[in-house]
Image 1 (tube, rainbow, N blue to C red):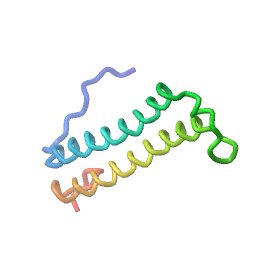
Image 2 (tube, rainbow, N blue to C red; image 1 turned 120 degrees about the horizontal axis):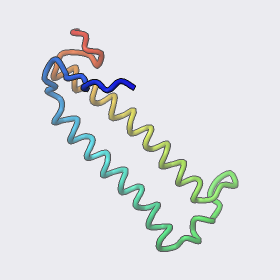
Image 3 (tube, rainbow, N blue to C red; image 1 turned 90 degrees about the vertical axis):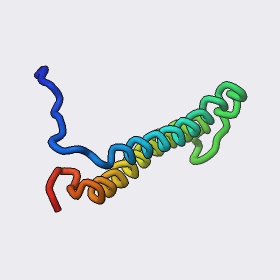
Length: 98
């Protein structure tokens, strides 16, 4: 393994405040959705056994929903951040000036 210092950005990222705010907002939204899963398991765990779709119970559907939601949110976050970086920094995500 290489133990070298992390690369430092050559230029200042003017979109960092936007990316931080967006990341926190998306984290809170995901945490609330996840809290629903936890609360159902704490308050009424029998509900997780209920079949909801295609013979799958709520626990499986909710679990896959959490995974799929996180992937979709990551794609949205990435797309929004790239768009903002281009607008504020004038460069693409690969660092090429457009």
